[in-house]
Length: 326
Ligand code: 2P0
Image (cartoon, rainbow, N blue to C red; front, top):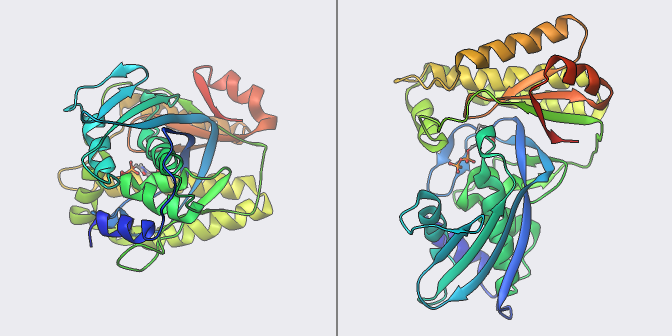
């Protein structure tokens, strides 16, 4: 099954009234239980479920209109060449929605700190699909938008909602049961910050890294069972507001994901010496009574999870922190 088949199925019978412009915003998200590995690369169908926290104040804003002479893609006001990787990836995604040979003018502003290793593709594709929905007046529901966003980038399906969000793994071949939904709970005292280790471009993209891990890492065999356990633990910790249980599981999940990558051949080692130094700093802080935990994505930078009441002590120990949430 192709992406275009899924789009056709979702848009069947939707004849909205097209508007001159569609505009939308979508937030970034950080996984507390990670998505790592696809069972279907064409449709970005995952091997496991995952769970994220949305960053309400960080994200993308996208405006789309139709134009006659090919696509024109602007990122933060700057027109990109058509062979720019971002422009190219976006144009291939837009191909799924063209009704004739029209082009699109897309203007995207992103407040996602690129160096943070926050998948900017998550908020970018979520904003794009919402902007298309506004442009064509389809009035799709959140579940359908989540599925369409996933076709652009897996983690984008979680960027349709605020708060804690679960992406259900699903089991269907067409992926119609693999979408994200918000959890019915709030925990406003949770804070996330990030510690910059490096702004260098990552050596291996997450798509390739996931593929190599799945195909060659002996440790990947244990990953689905670990996610099943961690997901249950994290959901229990969230509903009981047990921060220690939450933090311990979140940190263990991220480190286990990196362990699967390090055991791939060739190894995928996103960590730099300062990554390890920050992880030790986090453990030291805990030994001295500050309840703080680390998580990491496909890069060398470290995100830290703590509670609002520990804000001053966290800032004192991590003066280089930038705030992502709260
Ligand atoms: C996540 N990451 O759950 C995991 C943890 C990075 C590490 O989702 O290939 O940009 O577009 O589906 O979503 C980053 O990968 O990958 C990611 P594609 P995506 O947030």
